[in-house]
Image 1 (cartoon, rainbow, N blue to C red):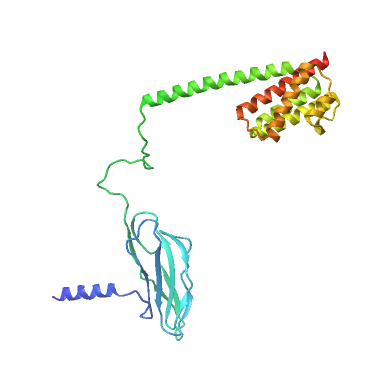
Image 2 (image 1 turned 90 degrees about the vertical axis):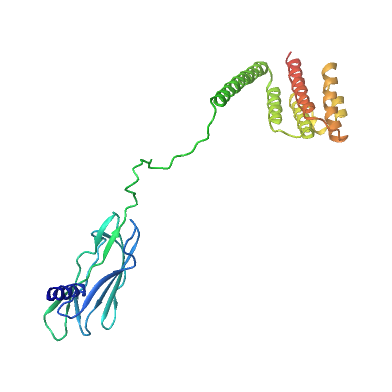
Length: 297
């Protein structure tokens, strides 16, 4: 019976906060006992020391306060007999931990001898996120679910790409041939004719409405007549221009017909189609080539 009583007294003494000659107590407390890896832990250091005590040294908490990483150290709050300071710490590895040995040194006013107070630690158990019963291997990243595509669909798509590339190549060769032919045809033309043909190509590339395309093509033609034949074609009506020119009959009649078509669109509000407008551009260009060849012959 006596042995049990002595054992009980010994356990009660162990459970009491550590103190220095019964002069004070100090302990760590926390809001969580089993934090997750990387979860911020709020620690509070509380020390109760008799009034009139002089603190000689207070614990310092570096960033690497093993095994903890200290994220934040709060201001020390000083009361009549209680000192309090808050910390934010993190544990990065699963396991069992306790706060490192921490001491406070102080001196009682009536006693010249310094006293050391050991702070009662607090314990943590950081669980592992791994399940020891689960032995299945998993990739570092989650697998991406891709839709199934039939090989026939892939083959058909590849065949379509090849066909499209073939026709694109033929189209490119055709356009190149047209450009080379046009270059050869324009090599023997005068400067005014080449400038007029270049302007017609620019007009064709702008995607203009048919009515505007007629008007700009006719203006381009009048500009050529003005520059090549020294006639103020831009300032004359079609009838006045015909009276001022003395071209071969075929050229004169064709020029009159071309300009009257433009007048019909401009003044009579005739609505041509896009295809008709493109043909009109070709007719104007053909007339410029023919006229220039006649002039230089």
